[in-house]
Every structure is written in C-alpha cells, then in structure tokens.
Length: 210
Ligand SMILES: Cc1cc2nc3c(=O)[nH]c(=O)nc-3n(C[C@H](O)[C@H](O)[C@H](O)COP(=O)(O)O)c2cc1C
Figure 1: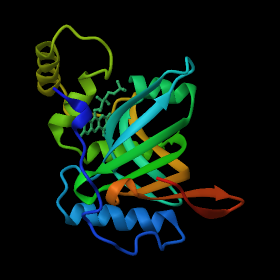
Figure 2: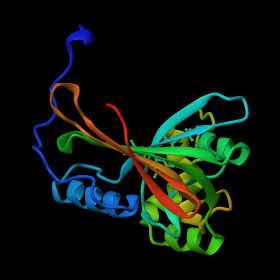
Figure 3: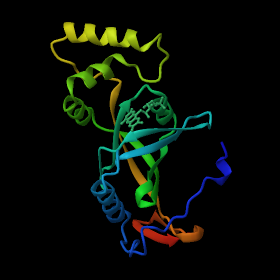
C-alpha cells in the first residue's frame, strides 16, 4: 500500500461566491443544506474532539441534531462515556465536518454545556424503543465481555420494563462556538479558507492561506 501517492486535485466544484455571509451560522446553514440536498450519507455526522485533564486529545463521530446561534450545536451521548468524562474535566471541544463530494470541511471550536434534563428526556423519548433500550443497557465506553451479554440484558429489560426511561447518565450537550473555519477545495492546492472569530460581540472574518 502506497499512501504517499494517494492524492487528488480539488476545485471540481467550480468557482462560486462562497464566503459572502458575515455570519458563520448563515454559511454553515447553507453548506449543511447543500450537503443534505446532495444526499451525502450522514451529512450531519461530525467528529467531536475533546481533551481531558491529562491533555490527551481524543476524537469520535457524533450526529448533529440541531443548531442555532443562541443554543449552539447539539448532540446526544452518554455522560459517563470517555467523551463525557473528558468534557466534565474540560468543557473546550472541537467539531469537524468533512463532505468529500462538496470538497468542503468546517472546523468549529467552543465550549460545551449539558442540555437541560427536560430537553434530553424529550429527545430520548423520541427515539425508537430498541435504541432507547440499547442506550439504557450500554454503559458507553466501559469494557464488556461481549455484545451478546448486552443483547441479553436488553431483552430482559424489554420483557420487564413497562416503559424505558431516559437513564440519568444519558443526555445532550450543546457547543457554543467561538471560532469557525470553512474550507473549500481549490485547484493545485490553492484552497479557499475563511475563519470567523467572535470578538466583542461580533464575528470577525479573516481569509487564511491554504
Ligand atoms: C456515523 C456515526 C454516528 C455516531 N453518532 C453518535 C452519537 O450521536 N452519539 C454517540 O454517543 N455516539 C455516536 N457514535 C459512536 C461514537 O463515534 C463513539 O464510538 C461513541 O460515542 C463512544 O465514544 P467515546 O468512547 O470516545 O466517548 C457514532 C458513530 C458513527 C460512526
């Protein structure tokens, strides 16, 4: 396998008026909409990076469930998972989208907060029964003997419980962004990059060298 020769040119999406919006929320709304319209699988999948108090960064994919400038970028998980433990130690995190077919990536940095219990419960209850039961028996990121033992626990739970309640350890976070970076692939390495930083109540826009 020769990874060093694995590259391709970008810029196939053509010249477009890309970075006009003064608000990064307008731009990300437009880009997400285009990713969904293009039927990019899991267009709302994003890499979440966290850093615990030992200083080691870690990353994994989570699904963006909603976002707004007021409420931030919302995702749901297990608060006792590795990411949950790291976020409890350090609320700074980064989100990253890569949509290959659009030749675009977005980096978002900010601080996270847990959602209200009410909001988490409402979302949990909107999920299918089997995924609620799975989330209940799966203490995310903790070692297990095998997947069969979890399936047995889930079956037992489904037989016994009248209803599957949202576990205390499960819920949502919202990331309030302070920094965005948008990247659009260009030809011969001349990609377009723009950063937005929130300074004194305003978004400041800067072009960056690719
Ligand atoms: C496409 C995709 C979507 C995922 N969505 C979520 C999600 O929304 N929430 C979640 O907790 N894990 C999600 N996962 C699983 C995580 O990537 C990860 O394995 C899990 O959360 C445990 O991470 P941690 O041990 O670093 O905390 C998803 C994985 C993939 C590949």
